[in-house]
Image (cartoon, rainbow, N blue to C red; front, side):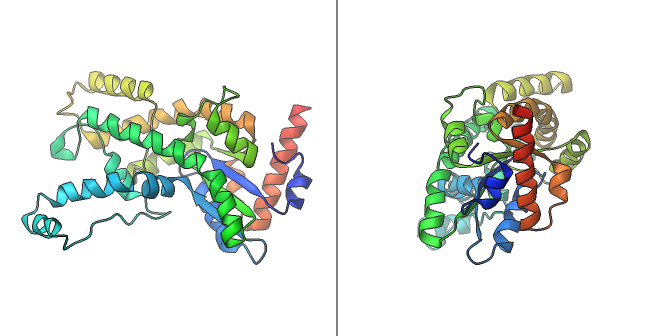
Length: 294
């Protein structure tokens, strides 16, 4: 870890932290709080991996998908062909709907589904984008300090980070770079949180990337247990069914990543009200981890 003790972290002139865990456990809430509450000389730069994915690496895919739909409307087609309108997504840190819409859901086209092969192609695009966005973190830390004067930096990761790294490989390029430059903090949820996350996802699905092996198995299992074909599969029900199983699939992968940093509970995160609370939480997690190692 880049901080030997909690005291070292508290005394650091440049605090650099990466938050990871399932979507909905407080990563973006904490990062936003740090950004908004930071004061002169002690501000925090908020780097959102999902935002970087949706703008820098998948923005063109997203906009092109909008244009395909617009071309089906005669009036919009005419305007597009004459460069009379401009179409782009309005993705923000808090609104990732354009990315979710592009990634899509496999199944019945009458219900908004896309062919499974197309879905897998977009999943691969997301994987490559996520790796690139994670590797951009070090450069953004330099930019944050050089351009804006921010020494403190928080990386707000995608919930699917555990799908694109191999925490059991000490030479994994993403894990290596991240752990060399930031303190990796796992926000661990309980069984109660898992049930709530499923309910939240059911109301508002977020962008999700899954490893191909896992996704192929889910696709085969779902069609077999629900007696549907690709054309008759309910896309909404499939992604919700898959997400519930992904939580169990991801937990050991998050736990393996925790060997590269520290862990805090979602209950602890819920108690954080300001920057001082956050710093105290992280310092305590560092000391707990060091104590266990000795």
